[in-house]
Image (cartoon, rainbow, N blue to C red; front, side, top):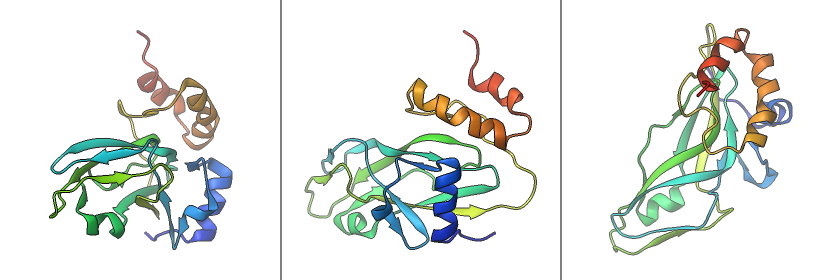
Length: 169
């Protein structure tokens, strides 16, 4: 297992849209920095699920990990949810944040402002794509349709997963 370098990350972005929309300015070392979909202000001790602006896709031979930008940590913003993005998962992330500022002041995150690092790590062994209710989280039907051909190409038994993701109601 190893963390992907910038060149490999850009290659996967071009081939599989692992980060969309992509902005070159948000490449950071060996990762990418995600931003928020909307401006958000968290007051002292307030907990909120904040949605990423970017759609994230983790190809089946990778997992992704998240770490908060230290700039916000210094202000007292804490990132609560697990730091793993499963292989085969696609959607916008719900980032659980809480304001623990010692000064008890509000913290504002502006749209487009770097917030969370995402790094992709290669994995060994057979793929075990994500199967769950959060697949395609916070995506429009049009956005979902753009990822279906990618998933079909990447997941050999895609039809089995499709039955779970698109349950008939």
